[in-house]
Image (cartoon, rainbow, N blue to C red; front, side):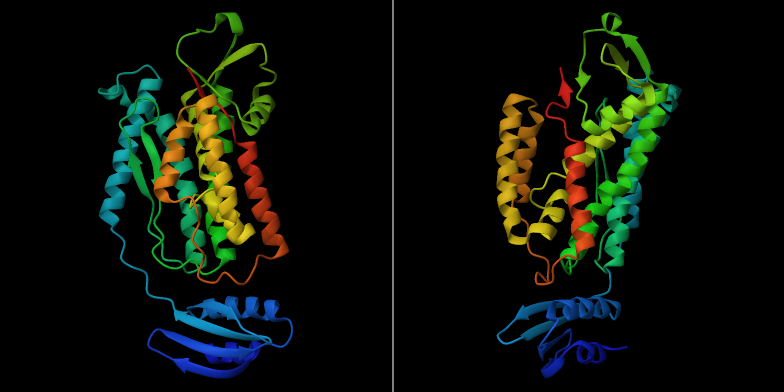
Length: 346
């Protein structure tokens, strides 16, 4: 199967020009244009071509077929060094949480937390990476970010996309895969951690330090694992804390703004109207920052720096299927389930 076979299979080719890395074709599709263009796009991806679709008058379309370039080289050494440094920084944080001296052999006591949070971050980023490969988007391996902080030890992990995102379907699946892959491990970690956590009466709990906000999903899982805790305090085991962080990271990534995972999902569903959602969410971050948690103000600043509006994928013409729309809606609903207005209460 080649490019010309695919073009003629789904359209009447009127003219065609071939260049070194792309092909420009004028085609006519008199009926079922959206269906045929979607099928054409899927088959062209298999033969290593992206497609950009520009509708013209009277069922004519200008198609720009772009040869998918070979993936760029990975800097494996940098990925490995950052991974090891993040393991060390999360081991130190886990040891602090356990009341151990992280600068001695007792650092090993931070292993449960380190393994838990690293697994959550790894699965989240590998979800993006695997789906990027499926849609032939050149993506780096995860860059883990060590952070010398006695509480969490890391600022998370990211991957970098180094080529076009071909269409809305790819945008949805690449964006949503991270939160859903990470959620699977997060729930497992949270269940194990809650079983290891201490539950004490309210009057026996120390009033010093801080408490963590509870999202709908956290409350539900907590109720299933340890029952009603309305008149008690749960002192989270480091593994449970990693699970809580997993839900929190999932929620931050699902903010439907800019080029966060939630921004990808919202654009795939709403297209150019996603920018209005971004502006509303940005204003909400400011309001919640003043009313509840100052960290929302930091996120408001970061999203300004990274960009509130989402760029178009290469092909913005073909829309999501009904099944993909359901997937997108469920992914945005996951944002609601993992949201807490005041995640950290001093």
